[in-house]
Image 1 (tube, rainbow, N blue to C red):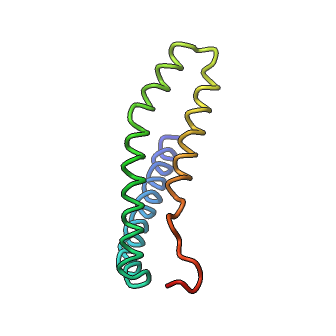
Image 2: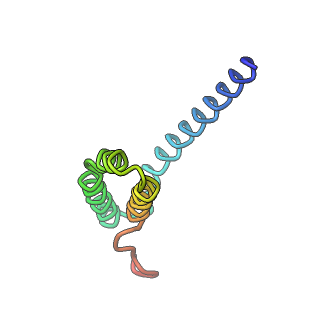
Length: 109
């Protein structure tokens, strides 16, 4: 039994490490491809939009984890609703972060 657990943990660590490396490689490749594909003006807009969303994400997320935990500990009978609400909020925030800003129409480049 302990051998199986160690094997499972090592496999999980290997998979997570591989996905992290793939994320770094794809992000690095994107850093070289995007400026050439978009051009300086569109890349600047993309960078500005991304920066604004990230700053707003920090402001919106500030204290959310602690407030959800406090609400759950104070009202245990409503814990499922509070946790679901916090998860739904996080999902909406991630979806909003992935929306692109001012995407150019076809033929406008």
